[in-house]
Image 1 (spheres, rainbow, N blue to C red):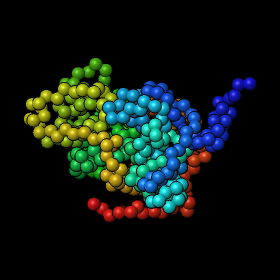
Image 2 (image 1 turned 180 degrees about the horizontal axis):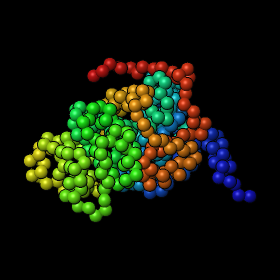
Image 3 (image 1 turned 90 degrees about the horizontal axis):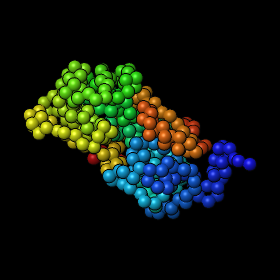
Image 4 (image 1 turned 45 degrees about the horizontal axis):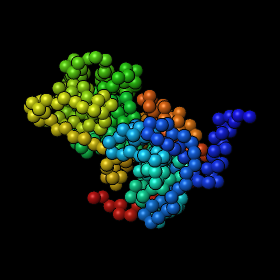
Length: 365
C-alpha cells in the first residue's frame, strides 16, 4: 500500500530521530532539497548546539544551491540555510535555554539552518532581547541588515534626504522602505516590476512608486524616476543592470549608491563623465562577508523596532517537511518572507520561558 505524504514524512522524522537529525538536503547543484537524516558533527570548543525554531529562506540559499554563486559552491550533498533563531542546547558560552539568533555557514561538513538542530560557532550567535517573537526576529535578520546597513552605515542616510530603492517589493526592499521612512528620509521612492506589490508599499512609508516596464530605455525610466522623486541623494540598488543606469541619471550631486544585488543583470554601463560630473559614490554591500558582530547595532535597531510595532513584515511559514514547497515559492519572488519551522516549534515563547543572557565583551566599540 502506498504511503500518504503525511505518513511518509512521519516515517522519515522517526528515522531521523533514531539515526540523526531531520534536515533538508541538497544533493547536487540546481536540485531542490529533499527531506532526510544527517548526523550532527560533535560539538567542540567555540561552538554551540542550537535547536532550530525558525529559519528564514533567503535568495542567497537558492543561489548557493544553484552552483552559480561566486563565493560558495558545494560539490557534495549539504544542508542549506544561512540563518535561524533557536534555543541553545549545549554550549560553553551560553547557558542552555538561551534564545539566540544564529548565522549558519552551511557546508557538507556542517549542517545549515534547515534542520531540527545545527552547530554554530559562538562568534556567529547573538542572544535575543527578551519578549521578541522568534519568527519575526528571524524574518528581519539577513533581510533587515541588508537594508539597514547599506542605507544607514554605507550611504550614511541623513534626515530629509531623498531615497530611491531599486527592487523594493522583495523582503529587503520592503524593510528598506520602512527603515528610510522611520529614520527621517524626506522622500522615499520605490522601484520594482510588480505594480500591485508596489502599491502595498505606500502605507509602509513610500512616497512614490515607479514600475519597471518591459523594453523601456534608461532615458525614459530615468525621466519617470525624476518625475516621481526629484534628484536622489541615496540609492539602495538590488537590481543593477539597466535600472541602475537609469537611477544614476536621476542622482543628485554627491549621491551615494550602494549595490546589494543584481536581479536585473550582472553588468551595467556607467559613464565615467556621469560618475565624475555628479561626484557619485558607488559601493557594494555583502552580508555574507560581514561578521555578525558588525551587524549587532543594525539587528538591535531592527529588533527594537519590531518590539515597538514599527515594522511590518509579511511572513509565510512552512514546516520543515515542506521545505521543497517553500523553495519553489521563494524562486517565484513571493513578496514575503518565507520562514521554515521545524515540526513542534511553531509557538513563540512567553517571556517567562526565555533565558536572559549577555554575551561576553558587550561594550560598544
